[in-house]
Amino acid sequence: MSKSLPYSMKDVHYDNAKFRHRSFFKVVTQTLLTSNMRRECVSCSTGKFLGLLMIFGLACLMLTHANKTHSISDGLVKGIGTNEEHKEVTDVGIRFKKLFRRAPRLPPRLSPDEKVSHGNITGKLNEPDVEEKWKARQQNVKDAFTHAWSGYKKFAMGYDELMPVSQHGVDGLGGLGATVVDALDTAMIMGLDEVVSEAGSWIESHLLDRINHKGQVNLFETTIRVLGGLLSAFHLSGGDQGIGFAQKGPKPTVYLNIAKNLADRLLSAFTSSPTAIPFSDVVLHDSSAHSAPDGLSSTSEVSTLQLEFNYLSAISGDPKYGTKGMKVLEHLKTLPKVQGLVPIYINPHSGEFSGDNIRLGSRGDSYYEYLIKVWLQLRTTQDGNFTYLHDMYEEAMKGVKHMLVQKSVPSELVFVGELPIGPKGYLSPKMDHLVCFLPGTLALGATKGLTKEKAMKDNLLTFEDLENLKLAEDLAKTCFEMYSVTSTGLAPEIAYFHTKDYFEDGLDGGNKSSKYVKDIIIKHADRHNLLRPETVESLFVLYRITQDQKYRDWGWQIFEAFEKYTKVESGGYTSLDDVTTIPPPSRDKMETFFLGETLKYLYLLFGDSSVIPLDKFVFNTEAHPLPIPLERRH
Image 1 (cartoon, rainbow, N blue to C red):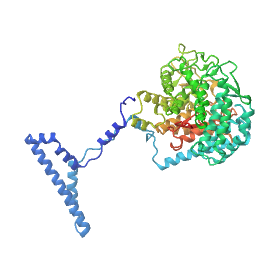
Image 2 (image 1 turned 180 degrees about the vertical axis):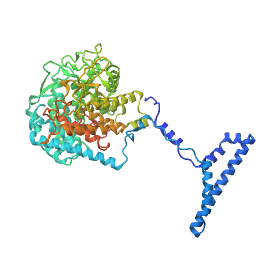
Image 3 (image 1 turned 30 degrees about the horizontal axis):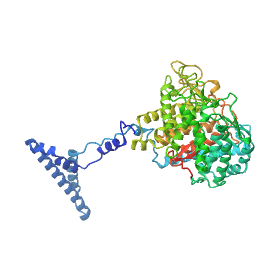
Image 4 (image 1 turned 30 degrees about the vertical axis):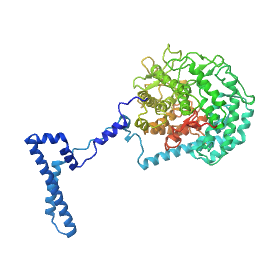
């Protein structure tokens, strides 16, 4: 049951009602009819005198108004009447108006979330020219996607990734044409039918053969990028009564059949393991699997497969995929934790966590993301009780706030640190850019995809939800300042924060005009930018939920920096080696997630909120939207 709030939308409406205009006649009559007033007036001579005086004044005012109307209408109809007569009537009217003028109207009291933000109440767009501005900016993102795809198509079609500077392709993800599959649903959402046709045709002609003959792939990366991309394309192309964004490309069943073939091979990571924890690597051509060289799996990787496998079970009618995936989370539920927080490694041979390193960056991040997202996906199904996922998420977020959240010096940016040697050790003020997924996850967990306004109106937010939403907004600002503090306006891969216990001089981001130049420390080895999506992902979610215009403005600044410093004229966009220097040296790699995530989230951020609504879709960790609630075939 939700706790009552310190204020609600009902209070706001009540306050607004108090300040509505009322006529003078209504004020007088309501006052005279009030029982207390009537008793007091008849009980003393003064009251009687004042009552008579009020009635006399009202009568005079009504007579004056009638005379004025009669005089003016006579003048208009009969063509008579002098300026002097009109002036006399007007003067009398003015005198009475001054005597009985109403008090000035007070502005309505607003709840804190409805106060003016950047000159715009709750960031809602009302002016047509403002709407047109964001449509134009959305088109800029669409053009950027077309430019990125053109470079990939020209120099690397069929390879996993494009190296845009040297103009060739490279297979770094198992050789399954990962960019093609990752980019497909983005092209569908943008309405780029030509790209959809090109990508869909390649998938139909080549991907199944690649899956049947390729060697080792990473279970996690292949699931979130390739399997997730195929499943999203299935729905967005109209499969299983899906939306039908795509007008071109193969039939939805093509995507589904390839997805099933791939998933059947990936299941060997589960069946080969002696525990519920899958191995990290799969050999596709013989459907075998093995653990990583150190014998361990990443906690985030084994717990970030469930959205995809659950949806595949739902649309295929075969429960084996979802069953295997959910056994991982059921097992993780039983393991000891530190206020809901978990180490970043787990041993598939023993089923136990390994080491003490706790962080929300690499190898830990999406464990926390999928707790709430899988619960959102499954909460309305009849197949089981999944409240344990929400309980694990809530406990973990309390642990984050209690053990990992700190503020920087001197400007008090809120950041999430790490515990490299566990809860009994020191807190490192290190924060990966990957951690910038957290603001969006916190906001999604608070309102379940509804706007904040609707969630508050329906009294759906607890105090803890409001606290998490506030933390989400604070962390989103920090993530944005990680961009604005650098010379290029692009964030480093890793940042450290100046605290009372830690500071290194001479390692700022290069933008000396930034208010936070002393708060954020960027070490030389961490200054690269991989075109990552996490910050714009959170800006997208927070804009959808709060409708605060600043998140769009921040997203536009980030997009402009990408355009200025990462665009390669011959086609594509490149990662950077150092965001603190101008011109920044390139790293010559366009990661698949730039088309699959970064540009998709920017496009949706600048567009209509009814497209892929957050209460009807859940995005996997690679930004592939899957529909909710999950409807299973029978």
